[in-house]
Length: 91
Image 1 (cartoon, helix red, strand yellow):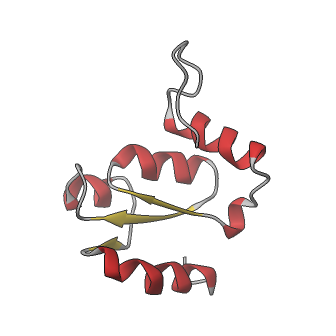
Image 2 (cartoon, helix red, strand yellow):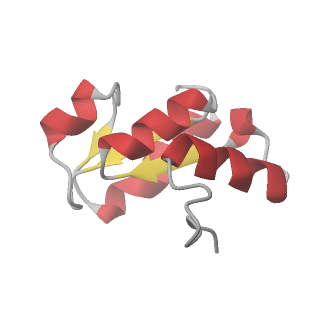
Image 3 (tube, one colour):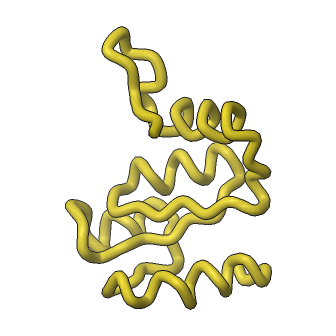
């Protein structure tokens, strides 16, 4: 479990995602950021990670699209197929 620290460390999504990738030794090319806000997409882009937007969180479709997310899922049941497409190279 990772998140920002009380002292402000990793408060910005790009920094937090960079930290997670390093600590967990995750290859960004094999990772997928699933998020509901533009900050998730911005963090993914800054770290060369694919981003999938979800329409059941706090953000809007417009917010996600404006941040560059090209795939916005409507329901949790859509996640497995979308992640599989990304894993197959359809970023």
